[in-house]
Image 1: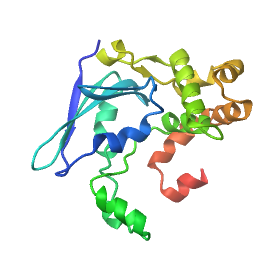
Image 2: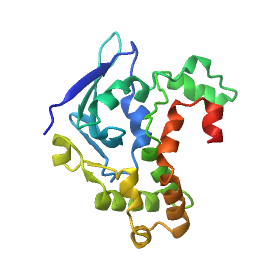
Image 3: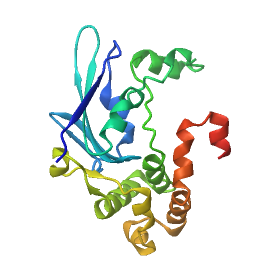
Length: 216
């Protein structure tokens, strides 16, 4: 077992952790996500390998502090990007609400930020699975495939059941009949496979200017 590594993020304001990172959870039974008294744990595949990332909030009058603990080869990579994950790059001051409902929501959630993981395939595969079906069907399919083709996450969270999703190479090895058995039709499975064949090029988009990334 690798020694844990830690980092923290203290932006001088409240950090609604669950609201910021909750969109990364793929349903209540997502094997890559665990919540408990010690905070939120998420399993991922980084460019340097698997990682378990634990996040907990320490409240203070001067602002919240998020303490991150990471296990696995991908720990340095993911901890370096902790501020990004928690929305440090989201320039909310530039956002203009042109509708009353949006303005009211913004006023009520001034501390919410849109975070980024910098992991394209991590987000893209479940997003494709979720097309044209109900959330319940999509989450069930993703859960089945991750449990079968993912891996036990590094560190103690893995002993509690946390898993990392398959890597791009591992997703490519999933047979066509296993996609169907999990509830993913041939068209969605084929879309996933076509994206995975250019996974490296897609992952590079996170560092490209918006227009160039869109063209790719």
